[in-house]
Image 1 (cartoon, rainbow, N blue to C red):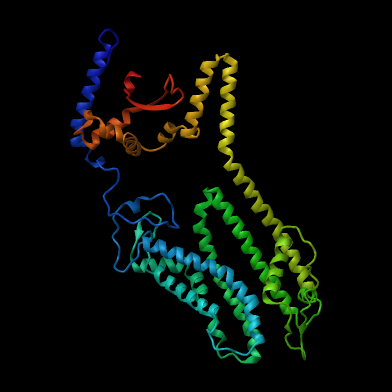
Image 2: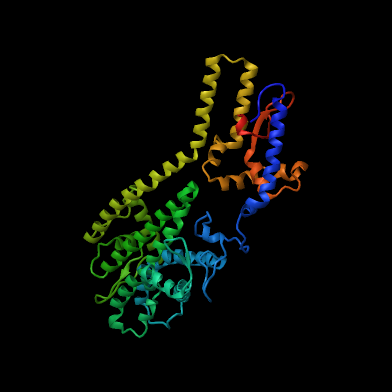
Length: 460
């Protein structure tokens, strides 16, 4: 143990140098496993994935997979997940619109050749991509309860059958093919059935919602997702609102569609009880439907579009109840997000108020007061008020050594005293280095500088 006295400093130096020599000697024997900050593995291209940001242990180890099996965190799977995400968003927008607006429009015209319209071709491509996604899921690895990557095809199939297979299969069925060779007498019933069955694709949104949950820590992303969800639900309600009006159009003359036709001077024409033709354009009907649903769920309701039949009034009541819940949920989260964004500024002003109260209480003179405030402001600009040492102590010793080695890499690489030292010795030294922050006096007073000092805990 170092002692105090006239030779205390010399003994401390000799003691510290002996510890360095001993650590360098033992590093060749006892610390070969810590020479690398990460286990050896082949480099993988980095692609923005829908999975977690933090790499678990199985991603850091070389994986033994079965032949023709896709690793669930591979770049190909990440790109494929983004493609399926875009297709699901397309499905969530266009499937209710086609089921409510376009399928009923097809009854007013002569039967055309199937898959002659661009939307029908796109729907066929989407169905094919969903079927391919099912095949890929049968060959994609997964992580079991023991955090082990499972690549056996039989186990993957059983896991997929117990999970999302039923939802994916329903969403991938091409229900449009059921319209082929349908008699004209059954067209109305078949169109309604197909419209309902096509909405089963929306079940894939459950999987998307679970994957997008990882962005909940980002305030701007949560705000964007909330507004997009609000607009998407308004779009769905607009499609249902139009479907109710169009279903009652042949039987009643007081629906909201009749009111819209009179306002736009575009009347419906009906002969012998058939489905009315003419009326407002498809664009006007959709815009009016979306306008009514948004004004209802936001509790505005100007009244220029209103419910007249019993079915429309019942649906409007349901929309108002649902809209009040959505309104409270969305804007409640918005206020929480805004408060989170300004939480750092609030903490800064709180700490600055404490510092000024400390200065006032102890009657610190003006030059010293200015130095305290400058140090506080510069330190806050670097760390945002976070105690970095406290954050570092929350990790295991092996991770602390890797982090300290990374933080002090410039000093250890540039200093000639550490040349030739083993990685194990450098790891041990980096754990003993202590960062000191100070202010430069003189002309550049107020600028922060960092330095490192070898800290001996036995001499503390």
